[in-house]
Length: 188
Image (cartoon, rainbow, N blue to C red; front, side, top):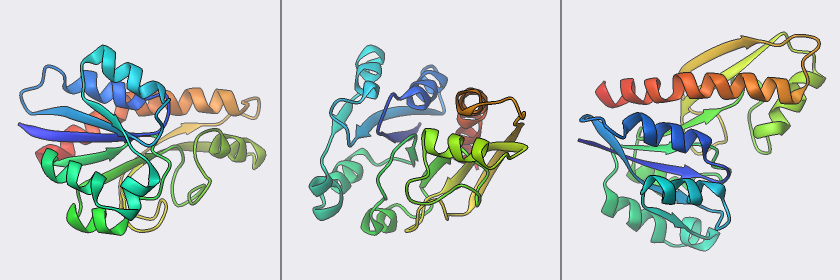
């Protein structure tokens, strides 16, 4: 049985989708969710789904080996960043080479980098009058949104679309594709 650990910072809709997708699987399961936000809605979702969840601070994450030690104990086959906003420390990435992936709400390399997340991305897409956008699932490296691309899915952006419309389209793509891509990765 493959083991998945998810990092999230906010509402946790992607985390919940992944947990439910693998809930009755004999191939993999989400064993833990970690968050840098002690008030994140993802904690409530985990409680309702009976999944272990912990919050941590910046010191535990990047200045000490506290979070690294939690991961070593959990022994995940895959670490998934699902709306996790902090840059991942190199010492954790080095310990889990090619086992950390992220989902980004745009077609990288466009609209990536520090500060480009959530509605910031969707507002930029609309402001720049892009005709398409999408999601990118990629490996995490030491730079924001620069790891090797695993998968992309596209959707059209209409001239009448506002940022909320774009966000809804991206959410649909995430819900549809993220669990399937994770499953393929775990089976490869």
